[in-house]
Length: 323
Length: 191
Image 1 (cartoon, chains in turn red, yellow):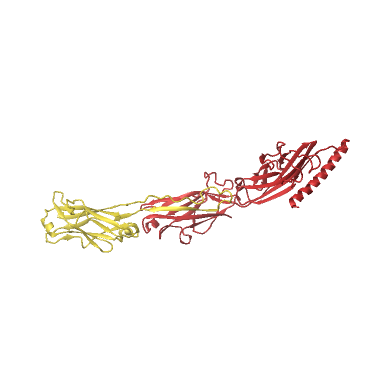
Image 2 (spheres, chains in turn brown, red; image 1 turned 180 degrees about the vertical axis):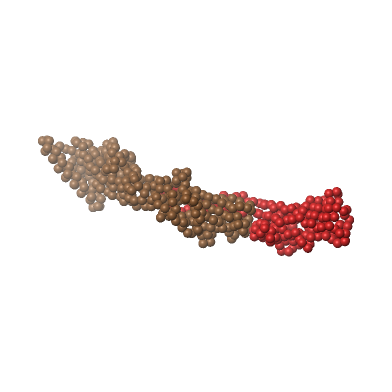
């Protein structure tokens, strides 16, 4: 027997025994004879999902077998529709961690009908979910889908964010019956570093006098809110800061300003202890609050020594690292 | 009779290429969904160096007073040196235009009263090549050879060109007394 099926059957037997005992106790306490009732059971009763986030939206699902029948025999009576509700001890559908809360969206799919609906915290769905007999002979009949958006994870401090979600299913016949499954979602967010806003620079045309220069404002994002180092490498020989026209080259100077003033960059060497990285906006408010400037200057003396007229081009690779 | 020539210079820049737009950077904005954000990116740099020519260091040439000795006059003993700069050792063209050139383009000095004295101009470049400029409209073309460390040949301390102007004795002897002068406009053009 497949482990999942065995698990469901064991759980079903446990539920059946418990429900029978409860029914008997209720009947005895009321002084009434035992009456036919409903039965409902959701398995797996517990499931923990651990995610080491490496980018992108987090999308995880759990398939459930929801046995919902009229009567006390889970395998031999008429099925009943059920409703479902999700709730979290935190009071909201969210993961909690060192950087605050992260919303999680929960969807419930009736696999018998293919209909999916979004569950809201502590809101009961219509009792229109399709129950099946034990032990889901056609396979699991419900699916919970948990979704956490990457955009919500990027800006959280590194650490583990957790949510406990209690799915309660309930039917109604001769009395209300309910069962609960608990899903735990743990997402570990690493240190996230992002360099954005790089744009190519046209330094202009040199007509014989003055320096040529250009700059590009950038956004450095580190969710850990720590200093960073920046390393720039040119496209010249050995990573040199040079522009080329065939075999002719022109050297240039590169600098970095993190808001505390321009500092010279040495090709291939990290400039450490830079500050002011954003930890709240991945793109610095759409570029409106960029926090670094990369600048290039080509001294006139270097241009004067150029081997000839023409277009000189090159590239710079800029890397930032959290410290 | 005094003869004086003023040399003027003009530098021209030609054929400036249109500034090309460099290709876009490789990490212009938001991270790609499905991966962690980029920690590095590349940007492209581009500049254009125009064709650049420059001429400097020209001074007036005073040939002195003709003593009537039947000898030609020139500044051959002290050529007027100047600096021709062409970036990248590129080709260039020089013209020496006389302000008093008449039909036919002969270099001439004028006394301002209709009197003219023709003269010749010899141009010597860095390589020592001498060109006798018979006509004011003659263009001298050079392939390279105007390399200078700086556009002004280190403040004209290391000039790379010179001119010598000469007046034949027969023309001097036939001229009316007076002061004769001309202005030569030297134009260097990148080609």
